[in-house]
Image 1 (cartoon, rainbow, N blue to C red):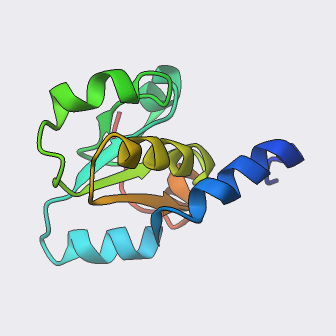
Image 2 (cartoon, rainbow, N blue to C red):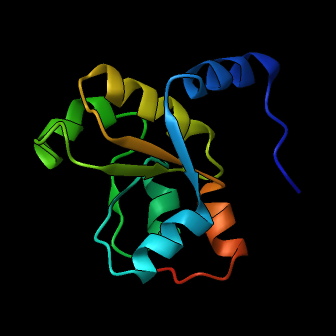
Amino acid sequence: MAKQHAPRFLAIVNDARSRIRECNVDDVKRRLDKGETLNLVDVREESEYASGHVPGAVHLGKGVIERDIEAKFPDPDAELVLYCGGGYRSALAADNVQKMGYTNVISMDGGWRGWKEAGLPTER
């Protein structure tokens, strides 16, 4: 069952989505299948990441991504594919990372739930 989000939360997510690029789980899988190396960034809570994540994903939780992103990805032109549980928190994080000068940020709509529902590989 999908989580019901509060209207004001959805309003700020939709506002962020007006400024960011998004992809979906199939887009990411297709690129990985072609052999592309992607900078996958899991913005969920640490406990969520520890319980399972997309293989190769780096954890930079939404609560600390602005503080820590420059140390992990110093190149502001690096392509970053952010994901969370469903695509809401990653949209907000993508918007903030862009405000910091990162120019190639994408939020994966569908997030971890979409990845798992598609039966794609995971790791712990």
